[in-house]
Image (cartoon, rainbow, N blue to C red):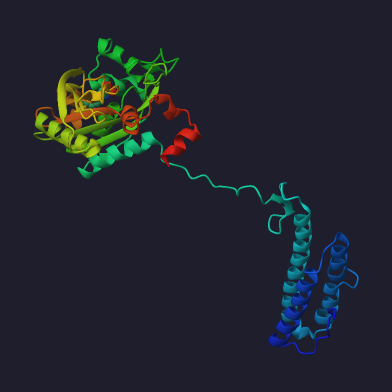
Length: 382
Ligand code: PHE
């Protein structure tokens, strides 16, 4: 028997619930019989028509004729029923559309939730999950090795003055060592005194001075950051790259401390098998200075990979990792007033390029991949 809207006399919660669910059940079972567009129209009109549709009748018979006190409860039930019936009518329409679409075609249906066309056969919208950039990840690893040794992290500006990038690091004006840095200068600074002229820092070493100006000894800091040099980009060069600087100043810091600290750090980073090796070098701000080499962690120090030559270490079995040395007393002179009397304190410093280490670590053969922002490259590190 077709459903007809009963009059309500009992407004208790139980009676309302019973009446509403009887109505909802009736709607659902009528929906099950729809086969054609004409059926759908009849169904929709019967339930939703403004004039004398079932929902309208319910509004009149249940809500409007209810005693005032009961109206809020009745209203809630009627609203629920309205939403429910409207939902069923929409589902009925969707079902017809779906049945009609050929199985080989994309089926477009009207979604209940999104209000627009949704192609249910396409993959869902995936939320891409980012990954830590390999250079940043390598940076974090290096920093955390030193944090465990009690080092803190310091940072400084990328646009730097000549004073911090060169002068206070014992590069005298016109000293040839400045040429090794391929500096990018900010234009239009000629009217300023040289030490105030701005440039893109060529290394993270200026933050040594900046930190010593702010903090009295003893200090132990690592300084991660970007640096710039006028190098055209290629597989192993980039005008922007990353360094991590280290600085330890205290009384009685010796070259032995430098060697022990860096040997430990290299083993923590590349595995306890690696050997370290120091070769004399020159930096204006350290004396003596050295370059640190580790046994090649690709070929294990043999210089060979099977029958082939090991490319990353150029068959030498050693990879240069960083520059280092004992802080030059001339550098302490610039921060003497903050407790860095070169006669009382000593220290060591080191600076390493992060990008090349990340290249070797992840077996990437072109530095440019790191900076092109190509998601297909980056998502491999997720
Ligand atoms: N700043 C040097 C460079 O960029 C590296 C370095 C840092 C050397 C600290 C010694 C001490 O080449």
